[in-house]
Length: 96
Image 1 (cartoon, one colour):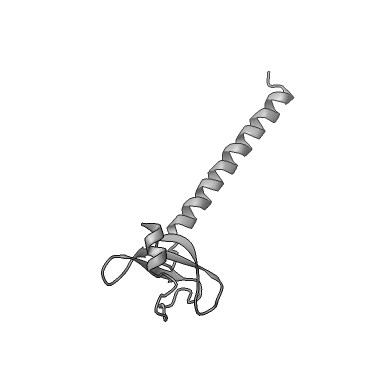
Image 2 (cartoon, rainbow, N blue to C red):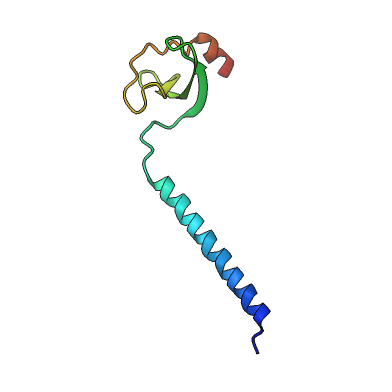
């Protein structure tokens, strides 16, 4: 005969399983959506134009494949319209 305690434990177990499955499905759907920005290493650099710290992504440059700024929060998903001087030789040397 099934007791009330057993039914409570069974309901809690089913709730945990369903919650876990929903969480996994949510994570998978986030990964499936295109991000809209290039992949790369997230970093913060001092923007010489704004004079404040800006979030960027570092990755292989389109010209020669060397480490470069491939995304900047200042320009969002649009093309970078600056000389990328925030990523100078001093920063490149400290990352190597």
